[in-house]
Image (cartoon, rainbow over all chains, first blue to last red; front, side, top):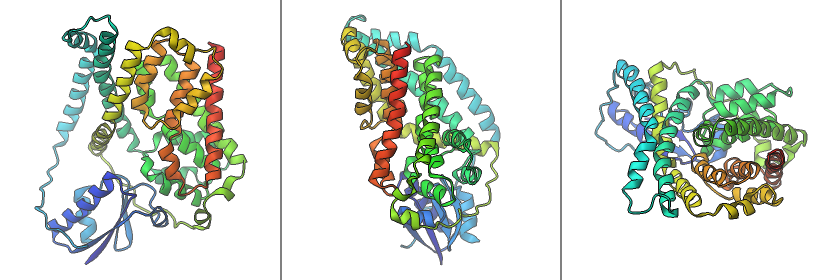
Amino acid sequence: MKTVKVYGPGCARCTTTEQMVKDAAARIGVEVAVEKITDAKSIAIAGVMSTPGIAVDGKLVHAGGLPDAAKLETWLQG
Amino acid sequence: MTVQTHDPVPHRAKPDWLWYVGVPAVGVALYLLYGQLIPISEWVTALFPVDRHSHTGEAIAFFVYDVPKVLLLLTGIVFVTGVLRSWFSPEKTRAILAGKREIWGYPLAALLGVLTPFCSCSSVPLFIGFVSAGIPLGVTFSFLIAGPMVGPVGLGLLYGLVGWKIATIYLVFGFSIATVAGVILGRMGLERYLQDWVRELNAGPAGDLPEAQLTLVDRLRIGLEQLREILGKVWIWVLVGIGIGAAIHGFVPEEMMLRIMGGDAWWSVPAAVVVGVPMYTNAAGVIPIVEALLGKGAALGTTLAFMMSVIALSLPEMIILKQVLTLRLIAIFIAVVSSGILATGYLFNLLL
């Protein structure tokens, strides 16, 4: 079980990112709990300056723009 | 939350050669189309059962010519900008600006504000990220003002619709306002007017993400994504803006325009700013209006002031920034930036 946090104030791209994380997890058969962090303060404390940002199990793996689907799979497997 | 089961979508990347051939080919095709817009739009206008030289005919001609023109220009500008900006990121910009306490940190911040990709929806985390890295508040403001004010979309459309001279004037003065306003705000020692939680916050260091290794195709793909996203968002503003421009072009008498937005009316510059600030649109929506205003003889200074206040100072942006700035700081920010805009407006009305 992996905990994935998607950081973003709720723009269209953040929602897409959340869906991409879920899709990638389904593809490789990893169980994930996705949490969306929309509060500016928490986003800033996590060190994310460009949204959407993604953290897997507490480790920031991506910031800014839509993630690459293939890379998402690697992050979720790692 | 648990995972929904979704049919896995196979994602197959297009081969590289398709990008190398396709992008230039589409570019050339759009360029050729751009060259034919006058005959095409005249032909379309002639389909309407109105006299070409009547008010309505003029308005239709303006609309039918401007819509494809603006959309084509936008396509080119947004794509090229998206590709160029893939070399920049807020994280890199922050690293460059942190520790630049000298005076040239301000123009540098303004320049990076133009080059760094960021959307207004992430301006709060960006602001906090900058301030907590020890980037002076004034430098951060230079960055935040320059981003929208001298954005490539505004400049490119101004160049295409109004001409290079006015685009250059706009670039020089927009850039100067961003720099000087940053310096002034920096000198005022405004840190105490940040929201409490921002001052107390010790944001962690930006996540040390390994720098993504992007190929040229990746960058082209980023440009295309940008294009899809931005065109999808602004097209409606473009249509509304051109509609207003067409109405001005067709129906507003020149004599009335001279009275309201001519250089002689001293109050027209502040009025343009007061009207401009609450207007919520973007560069792509406002420049067709600017084109029509200038065409009807509106004074350049007044029009520049209008355009700058629409683009650089917007209420939604202020509401977003309210999360980190106190009202007092927002008021000072608006006052300083609008003074710069007013000064630019009066200067050009006096000179020309």
